[in-house]
Length: 290
Image (cartoon, rainbow, N blue to C red; front, side):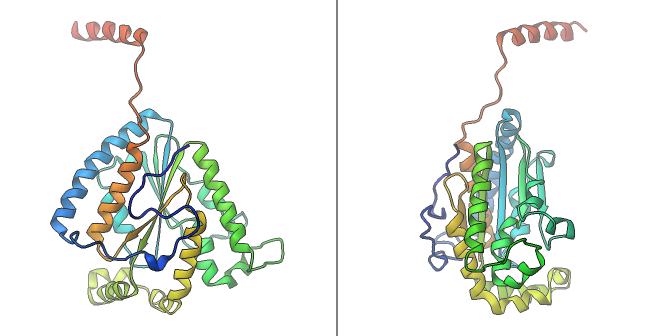
């Protein structure tokens, strides 16, 4: 079964993760925007080739999950990293407030029906992790989920972590490569980006007063992220916590992480057997004789 490629931002698998230990800024020496854009461009070329091999190999699917606080840069990172990918082999889904139909199913249903096929890349902009993040911050949401048993807020999160881990292990056994990214933005940087959305007319559409109101729950959100990420990072479904205060660095690290994980699969284009090669020779002669 797939095992995650290691890097500085890989979350441990032993539950020891502490969000305060994770920086929101890149290490010294990585602030050169021009250099980071050049590195990203080179990696995108590699990703394009790897996607083609993934499609032809037709044994694995790739699922990328992005979680973050508002204004961390999920949309722009997905756009920047996937800019060179063939859209025919990629699916992007954004999950917001559940619909009545989705509430009538278990919390994993709405994302399960959007999973990528073998040979394709699926991207979740938010995901089933919202059920142990925002719902943990606002547990009153549970009352509207039509759960059949009495809700115990002391045990339900652990139960949902177990459901998520079982679900992801099943997918991994079936050939889905799961890479999960938490784009960690600082509270100070989020404030700057919100003000930028207010002050620049062409960014006004991105702003929501509700996003500002949620800032008062920052510590609760950080606790929810810490518990969820630490409880569900596994070798076959790893979490990577990426510094998000510097967008060029964030995009480069996300792309590099995806690329390294795909490379270690050792995928190859399908080989043609001798009988097919003989047929190719015949068809080549026929075409050349036209």
